[in-house]
Length: 283
Ligand code: AMP
Ligand code: ZN
Ligand code: FE
Ligand code: FE
Image (cartoon, rainbow, N blue to C red; front, side):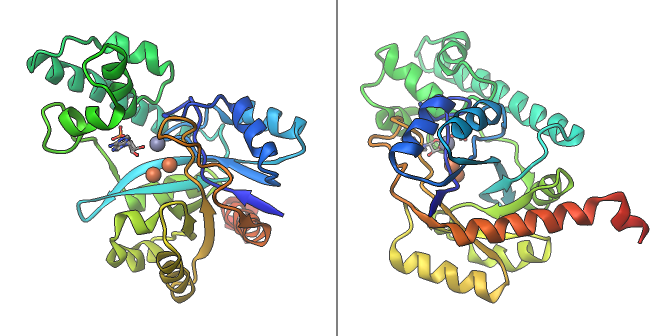
């Protein structure tokens, strides 16, 4: 039995609908999947229904953008209570930050004579959590660039004319936000960030796991992080980080996480929730 715990839909910058994602998971014979859209859990209700119909276990998740010592880090949150009031308020704020950033990027594009409108980007994104990939798609659609890569290279990367920094919470705040919503906090694709020095501090701050298995981790990188997970007593997770057809070939199916890791994650979620319950506080 296998799982993929890192997947995106069109509720953020993926291209699959939740139903298409569930169908792809079934095609790849996955037993369990988690949806981890950026700064949102809106796709989870539909993904759960579609997964249940296909006999696939569904795990609620999200991928939050955070920073630690000037490094951008992505923190995955699993088993979150999507009704948690503070979580809802905070991710609403992150979504507003994303929308304002799109407006700012568009005005910088306009300043270099690329006349696209924020509305074109919002219409194309059609979600509350838009990001640079949507601006890139709008640039391609309007004929200003011939590929998403070109859009990033010419306009959207750091130090390019339309690049706008994004407000980020601290990694410790992201971990705490996930925990108070009953979730489990995992550092996404550490091999892409290459900031191992932040891991001990994050473990201290309550980080639950490391995403050791990821499409962009080579075997040696995976082994390196399996070693760090053991050293800092962190759980191990993995996922493909599939964005559908956004970035070429769909990645779902490229990571098949053995189900025993999901079991351990579930135990941790139960433990984290128990630590929050009023009974735990009064004892
Ligand atoms: P944002 O969170 O809005 O800053 O956007 C980050 C997203 O842009 C991530 O999903 C990246 O994988 C994606 N991205 C970064 N560089 C490129 C690129 N050259 N081509 C396509 N997507 C990219
Ligand atoms: Zn993404
Ligand atoms: Fe990420
Ligand atoms: Fe991701």
